[in-house]
Image (cartoon, rainbow, N blue to C red; front, side, top):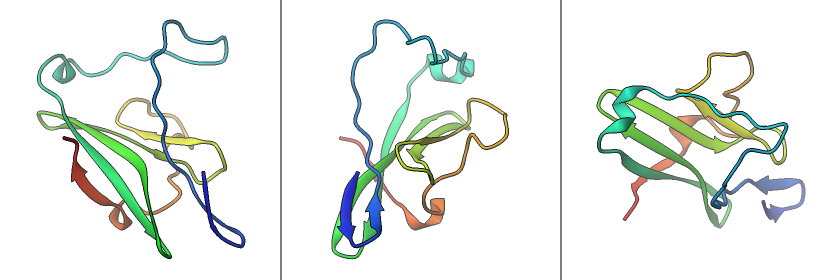
Length: 103
């Protein structure tokens, strides 16, 4: 999380390799579309003079998984995997992010 001004914070994503889930974490099945080529894009948010990599989109065929910093501190908003209440509550509207191909 970046503090960009008084009472303004921007969440960022950090990725790490995981060998097994912790007791409070879930493993979910994804669409078989993700068994093929996956196109990855970063989601960049601009807040004041700060640009932050705050999310990612995984696209396969007609399907997408979106992962962005959530509206609550230290939370994630995930779309395209689970259909449960409150799982996709991003910190910003998806239209506010700039989608950049991951290279």
